[in-house]
Length: 401
Image (tube, rainbow, N blue to C red):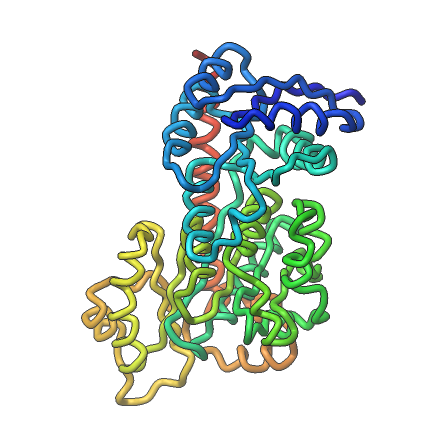
């Protein structure tokens, strides 16, 4: 089927027009009607008059004018897809790479297009962004990040069981990403193969899209998909924060719920996750060292810019009760924060871990650990329903206008 699209290209250099003309020669079933603007001001005029379906603007990462352009363009064309054209060296500058990508994603940039422009990459871009218009215009999937400031507190247990519970309700629409790159155990907890892994997605970075990302996940009988951590810890060095940000951005488009099990360290990769997270579950045990550590950790989370309404503090009582154990009131007093969810001590969790079968699939749902996971999953679903409702209301308002 012949597919036509108006595309606005924005860039100051004279060579861009020749690149566009050459690149648009072999686009298969796509027919592109190009417009070219050599300044942001001219581009806004063209956008207002021609109503393009896609806007590709050039950035060298040196100026800050693109940010204002993106905001103004969003006012004129709220639904337009915005793409950055870049020189290959731009995202190899490790000192600015993460910050620049995050800034662009914040300003509704949907994808990146490498220069010099090539027919194959433009065709793939159009397929990714525009073939499934309904999916593209729908709200992105929720990103649920599970964190702790130390290992061994049950972070992966919460991640796997929450993701599994959501998957039983939404088969094929939930992705668990094991971002504990050096010590990832999610595949083992699900009794899944160890390949493919996130490393395969990173190595396919130039051609990675939503479809390929799904192919590189491991499917679980519950309906869950897993993007596993690398097998060898030394391979984790190949996964930088920019590559992970791209994976996460694609995952949000392809899945309704993306659960990220993180490594207990605030590094650029975790920052990439927090920047797009809709909920952050911060897990701790009821021990003095862990509680004191989290009390020091919470101001860091606030300082990063994670809004309080997105934060959920989860107390994992994963040890049998003893006389000297801290009470919930003790923990809340030290944190100066309320506990949002309490996971009760459940001996069967250890057996589930050893068997590679998520506990929520084996237990009674009306009490104990599984009951709390159900409550958390209900809260997550309610958030998505609220986002969908707001999106529907906004769409109806735009239609009325």
